[in-house]
Length: 182
Image (cartoon, rainbow, N blue to C red; front, side, top):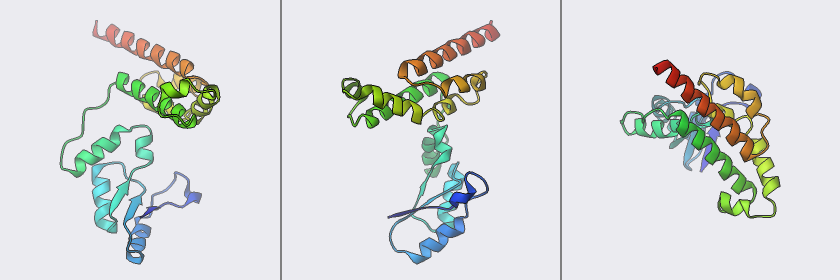
C-alpha cells in the first residue's frame, strides 16, 4: 500500500494539494493507493476518489483541531448527516485523553495508569506535554476567550497544568453562558 500526500514539502501548509499527482501514481502502480491532501469534508473525500481513482482517503490537518471531522467524513461517505457538534466539555475531555494517551505512548505503556506507575513517567509526561503544546489549544479554538488562553496552554509541562487551565476555562465559559441566559 502507498499513501501519497499531494503537496510538496516546500509548500508547507500553503497552496492546494495537486491531486493530479495521486492520479498519476494510480496509473503507475497496482498496489492499493491512499490519497491525502485538502480533504476536509465528505464531498472532498468523494471527489478525491472520483477524480484520482485512489482506493482510499487519508485525512490529516482537518482532523488535528477537530477529530470529529473523521466521523463526519465517514458518515457523509455513507450518505448520512454529520454527527452533533461536540460540546466544550467533550472537546476538553478529548484533549486531555489525547494527552494521556500520548504520555502512555511516550512511556511505552499500555495505558496512562500504567505509565503513571513507570519510572520514566516524568520524562514521558514532559515529552508528551511539549509535543502537544500546539495541538491542545486547537481543541478549544473558536470559543470565546480561547485565543487569550492559547499562550498559557503552549507553556504547559504537566497534565495537572493542562487540567487546571482547561477546567478553569470550562468554568468561566459556563459562568459566561449562565450570565447570558439569566
